[in-house]
Image (cartoon, rainbow, N blue to C red; front, top):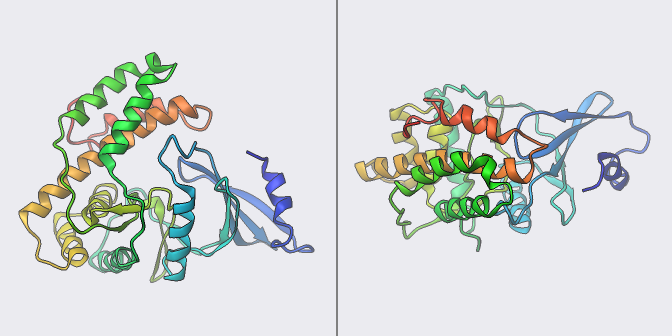
Length: 292
């Protein structure tokens, strides 16, 4: 990976030659290094430098780029201005702010999220499928085979037991293009406009997985979950939907914890994944399902 200054040199044809350019780090997020580039004090561009090994974390950069571009055409996200094969992307700066971690939705904001999610799920299908259980199983195996496995063996056994206790998901016949990581920091709001960012996990999936991640990470009330399910699926809410959303919420918790362990082993300089594992595994708001 090149230094930031090297990428800025490569962007000479895009960035203004005589403009006053300043670069500031955007501290939100665990996955990548992200910078906003300002011209004359105004933010104009965002430069994303990926910090994860793509194959290790099931990130398909070509698919990510294709979905990102399609979503931009639909007005769901930022326009890509430059990219390279390693996943470095320069995009337009979206005005607004990400949702707070403790976001509390209103009826109006839930309706806004519903419309955004439906537009995403109505996008043309792609080849890549996102199977959260297969991904979790692969990550657990990578951790088990890692040379420093002993440093996380106790946590690995704990989260493996939680994962194995969950039933296998039978996917529905109809899959949609899903975001698969709708945490508050992947949504930007600017007045009445809502944007999606971070397309690394995008792939064909059960639409209720997006609902489950949204519900869990954004603290949706039961009545809001019903509204989103009905809007996204276009049918009345049922107990079967509720059970599937609950199972996906549990899988989301497991996925995030396993991701932290793998991140700790493969990129420890970027994030103390082991410390964050302990924080989240024992947080009854994030993990109300599994006994520590």
